[in-house]
Image (cartoon, rainbow over all chains, first blue to last red; front, side):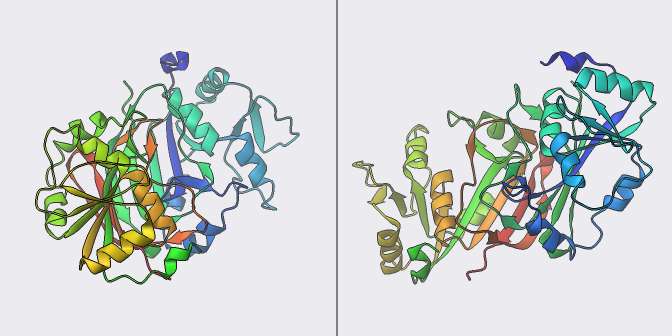
Length: 182
Length: 182
């Protein structure tokens, strides 16, 4: 087990992400064309209700840099922390943290309660360190064949508890699992 | 497009397979312990109804060799074809075929109507060659971190049509897609 499984924390963490049926969150170059086209026709994915309950967002460097291509800041009013050993950005929208231990301590001290974990590599890190409490995956009805994977290597199996599955428009299937903390 | 997309055929093909949430059909060494434990408690997965409608099974060499460890032949009474460039087995239960073109021709000539495509590498080959009509995936609520993947590289996106999703016992989620032949 990773050392940080012993981290005490006062907040819960949730993943809310879309993948292709073959488990990719983006094409190899980060493109989301396959998702955006379909997603616009999928109706209510529950994202608005989800984000309304979130008080803090944590993302990795890649995901942060992707937001910088949007031309607007999508998380106005929500504290955003970027976990990165390298990033050096002068951006009042974010707080940069260098490692997971520090991040958990900072979130506790800031009184975070409901934290959104975004970005493939960050999700993988958090899963490995037993820091994810709930995962909602919205699966698009397409195989891409290659791309950036949602999941990665683990030291041990992670058992999940199925909470709900809903079929959305356009053939999207959304399933929520909780991750029992052992 | 692969040349064999032009193959005419009189039969339809179906995949019916279980994966972990991270898309593995077996551990790296082929082990299914993670599935068997949970699967026994999952109740009716629809497999019996599925297999009752099948008139021919096609599998790859790895899957065939796995059946040889069972101690019994699980497909009594159903013609089984093994697609393999290498396999040389003296087994009256199977017919070995060396390539996809020959296989499709043989299935047509044998009057196959409803063909079960089994095994990860064979499924990948058939998907790449536009030879899969329907896919039923039963997802186990576990992340393995590594293993034999269900899906692989593709030349192009494959669009799927969502047919149905059912939640089974033990947190299994079963979704069926059809693959429109373009």
